Image (tube, rainbow, N blue to C red; front, top):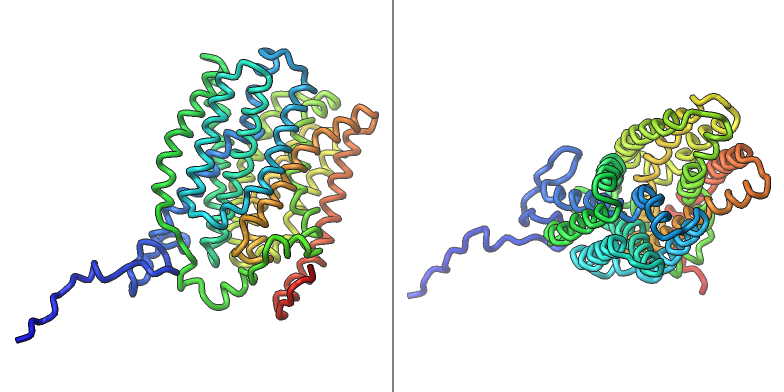
Length: 443
């Protein structure tokens, strides 16, 4: 007599589908949570948030907190330390072009394991550096892995994992950087004042070491866009896959750059020379410093709002307009002598910066797909980093040559308006191209 088949509990037969939301058994709908995300997405969003937070240790706003102590201890002038910093930034940018494609071919947990520990090593090198050569090596590690590779990885993973919710996912992740900008300067300055600037870097290394252990746990399982993002939504927000070589032969890639690189170039330039403008116009340094709070609030609010707008309007729909607030703010700052102009500029720049955080994470998947997103974004990040590094130096040379700094600010405002007009034409043609069958570009 044949024995009846042994009953297997449902929990053993169900498994996660290859293309679906992690932690959701086959045949069951994802459990929704606030914002339209599934419950299994929360850990991935938390991982993206933490990656952006950790990138703070390689960002200009954090490293610049210790510039006085570093210059005094090593006997460096402003120009010498600035030159070292620019050189380290450029080395990191060019290295990123070669290494950025790894995000396309390695699981997220593997990417974290090869990016966070070297960033921690850079913090240790800053804490113990006995010589300028070691200081330069520390800056290279911090800039490449902090500002470069970790932010690149988080942007790429959010763009790859989410489709219809891509704008909101990027905005949630980039809040990690906003949190770092709000909290870390206060903590770092307090530690440096109490026990020295090197101790602050030991603290940063400790935070990074703990994060290097926890983050792979959050990224233990990958996510692919689930059934909730199929159909028209995917078609509207994700293009057919392009390789990096094809993207670099596409003229629209270069036509997008005047808008994409503008916030980094202009923001770093204005912030770097803000003390000179304050002295030029006899403003109160304390009042001008407090304007950064306005910038931070505007950035956070517009980052969150921008994520929702992006999911409704798409990145190409928003691209022609996000630079307009920055352009207007620059024109106000260049023409109005009153100190209120710096507050107006900070508020308007915060609007553009907040929108750009979500926008730049979603533009490239819309234009070139997600198959080689990491490789393509690596080139974009390198261009942006180079612009951020070159802008302050170029402006300083112009100041030394007698060129009016308010006149330079006005020229940057005109650039924003001109780039916005250019984006109207470029994005219109890109949307038209998406509706036509794609033919391979010639080699």
